[in-house]
Amino acid sequence: MQITPEVNIILYKHLDFWNNEGVYYEQPNVEYNDELIMVVNDNGETKTFSSILYLNQFFDPLLNIPMIKYEIFDDNHDGLNDTFKFKINFPVNDVTTITNIKLYLFFKYSLNTNIQGSIERTLCEVDINTPLGASYVKINGDLVLKQKFPLSSSTFSVGNYKEHILSVSETYAVNTTTYLKNDVTDFNIESKKEYFYNRDVYTVFDYSKVVIPYKNRQVVQIELTVNIPSFQAIMWEIPIAAKIKFAWVQFMALFIPVYVILRLIQFYIFKNRIFPSVPVSDLPKMRIR
Image (cartoon, rainbow, N blue to C red; front, side, top):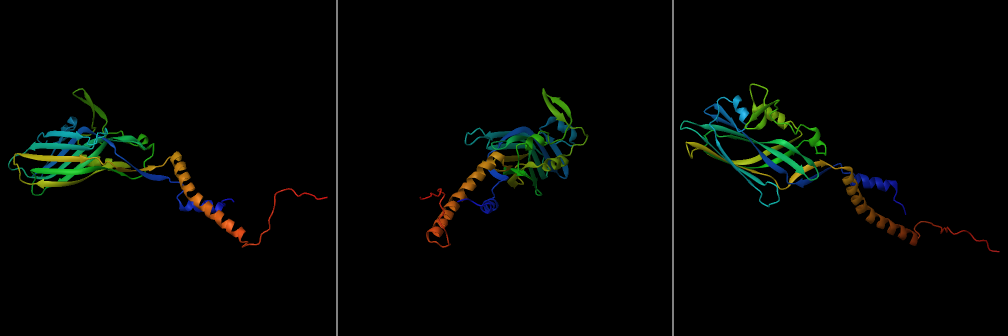
C-alpha cells in the first residue's frame, strides 16, 4: 500500500509541517554597566546627573551628587544575575518639591542558547510623577525583552546593537578609562530614547512603585529593584536542521496511525469482497503438457 500525494498534502497543510518560527525560553545574562542618568523636576526646574562623567558637561543645572549603591544577587547560583538592588540618595533642602523623577540605567543584555548575541547597552527606564512631592520612592519590576521580529543567528551581528545608545563619535578619557564623547553641544536623553526604542530588539522595565511624599526633608531616598525573568520568551527563526527534526516527528506522529487505519480498511474490503475483485498472481504461468 502507498500513501498518495493527496495524503501528503493533508499532512503538510494541517500539521504546519515546516515551522519557520518558534518560541523558546531562557534566562538572559544581564550585567550592569555602571551607567546611570537621573533627571529630577524640582519646583519646575529640571536638574540632571549622570554617572557617565563626560555627560555632566551638558547638564545645567546639575543635580546634587547622589550616593549610589547597588547589589547583585544570583539566587540559584547558576552564574546568571537574578536581581539588581539599587539605593540612591540625594540631598535636598526644605523648600524642595520633587514632582517628577526619571532614571535611565544601562545594562548589557546577552542571549546564549538557541540564539547567541548581545545588546551592549540596553535601557532600563523609570518615570515617576510625584505631584505631592517625593521623599521616599520604592520601585520593583522586571526587565523584559521586546521584539518586533523573530530573532535569527544574524540579528545581533548585522544590527546596531554594539553601538552606544547615546550616539556619540569622539573618544574621551577619564581616569584611564576611554569613553565616547557626544559630538553635539546640547544633550537630550529623550531623543536618544527614540533611537533606542526604534530598534527591532529592546527592553522595557515593567514596574510598580510606592511613593511617600514626606518622610525626610533633607534627603530623597530611592530604592530600585530590577528583576531578570528566569523564563524570558524568545521568538526565533528556526534553522533548517531544527525544521527537519520537528517535521519528522510530526510526520511520524500522523503517518503511523493513518497507515494502520488504511491497512485495516484495505483488509476489511478484500476479506468481505465489498468490491468485485480477481486474484492476480505474480508467479509465471506454467504450461501443463
